[in-house]
Image (cartoon, rainbow, N blue to C red; front, side):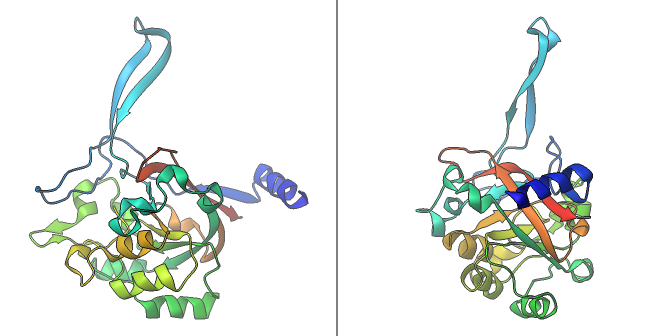
Length: 257
């Protein structure tokens, strides 16, 4: 109780800052576009119900339409076939929505090569410098890609060969999925897999390995530059959609000033 009281005081005083890692959600928010033969997710759209008018003289409110995996969102295990018998987003234990965060910073590498892939050796080198990834941690892969978050074309970075965005190869995805006891992976890109993940030896390895090992994904994160390599706490709050495979969410980080 004393620790919680101290935390409350530090939040009130500003000694602990709350950093919003969430991208704004609006009609131009980038969405994942699949080949035309597959089903497509809906772009975000507000539909006004009333605005202090004859349809509601004292209140303003809207309906909204979108897919579960739009904007900054949470991937539940049942989102992928490897986790189809595991939790939906409403079943994820609340204790597994909060955890310590580690930030793996590869902005320079991603700027030089948009197809940059995080290897196991990169993680091992990070741990040698900063210590082992804690149990129950969110692993946040910082690439600087959020700078394109308000430009859907640049964010997708696609050509005739498909999108070009950073991510993880199968070996690294398996490593995080099976060799580290983490909550999940957070990225700045449209999804947790690299743009070229469809052509890998294990297609979409992050979805495959993480969802199948009861781990989660967080996407389209921002402000990772405001977090230390370790020491922050991340809170990810998806909507409790019964039967849902994921949800747009507000992702917050607590950081000592």
